[in-house]
Image (tube, rainbow, N blue to C red; front, side):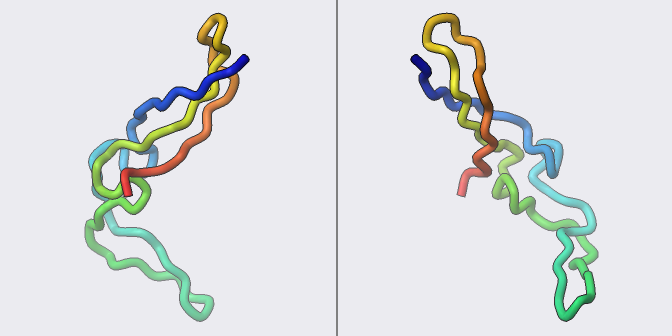
Length: 73
């Protein structure tokens, strides 16, 4: 029997700062560009925290698998 547990993690994209230096890159007509400045992290919504859904063994609490869910949209 397994159960689901929610775990907060530091965002791997912004390292918990909520900001991404030089912004995210986008592609338009085959060309890559960025805003060039600091931009709020889209992965965590600027909070610096993402949540993962962890499926754990109900008997001993060992993690079976962890699924990164995303920010706090």
